[in-house]
Image (cartoon, rainbow, N blue to C red; front, side, top):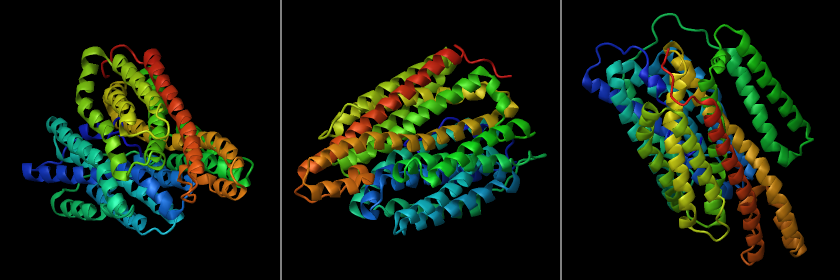
Length: 519
């Protein structure tokens, strides 16, 4: 999960469907509280883990590949099962599935906090992803089921405001706990919050299901999509460590790409697919989703390495790194409502073009600081990136929802939301390859110039990147490690800027000047 407080189309489901009759004002307020607190579990966790990664690497002696898996195992299962989680709520009861997601998420958080090895933490994070896939769509479905259509806009506005606040405070709170106590507390803090959510949901939230006949669950599509993403992520993350010719890497690549090909074949042939490919014939829908893929790949991949740079290279504390990332979330939160109004007045193309271009400038600015930089050197890039994303996200949602008829709105929003998460999953894996391809040659040159014992120690820890630990007196070697990391980091920010510019080009070429009227 990235540091973005909201993904495009996060709120679409909250605007559809009939409300449960007979809910009074008090009960509606409790439903809103449960939805906000439930969403906060996932939002806080998503923003805190990036800041916690350097401490996790240090205490668990984890390689950068294992650090990638700490993020990827959660995001992979969340993205792959998000649509399934929403469908289960419609079938089995939205409150029931929401509460099940909270329970799974809380138990997985305990397992994360108690992990003694990197592999244990990765497995616990995967379980968190399953809980998140039940929890995230369920929190918004509760609003949809409880508030009548005329009240949903205000209800969602309240949800968005408080969700933005919790996302912004997440890195600060997490950094404080990490600096004062341990990285384990970044996960342990979820447990009392989950207990409060469960108590409110049990006593105050009514049960609801989708009326009428339900579409079949696309089990084959969900299984193939998960397998395909997992295989591709394993291929890109493990290849630098195991070797590109490793049987496990080659098998994972073959399974991953083969499963994705089978996924698109299945989705094209079954009657009720989780990804209706016919929607892509609409240029606005196809363009908005391609822009989402490019922009959120840049965001997810770039912001994975930014906290590592701030803490491991520049020497900021976890609290200071959380504070450095705060302007990004705050600016996105403050601009989202205003940016949504731009679409009504000027159409979607202009805001999307401006927002993606500004995000590219932000990534370019983030590439400038070298070693020995401080908070103020990164602030301009973080602020401009937040400005660009704040301008782009709401128009993205509007473009997606205006490009399909009302009866396809739920599917369209789910596809776009899942795609934004998949983009980050794949980008973190691929950007890791880029980092290694730049970092290792630089490190090899530095190691060759050092005494043999020190050079060997440096090279043997190469998989830890900037988390390499050397004797206190080896300042020259430590500076070489930092410079090698910054060289790779600059390549990643440059690629992120190119991806964002690609999104701007998509907006210019594919998105209509004015959003079309909904069918």
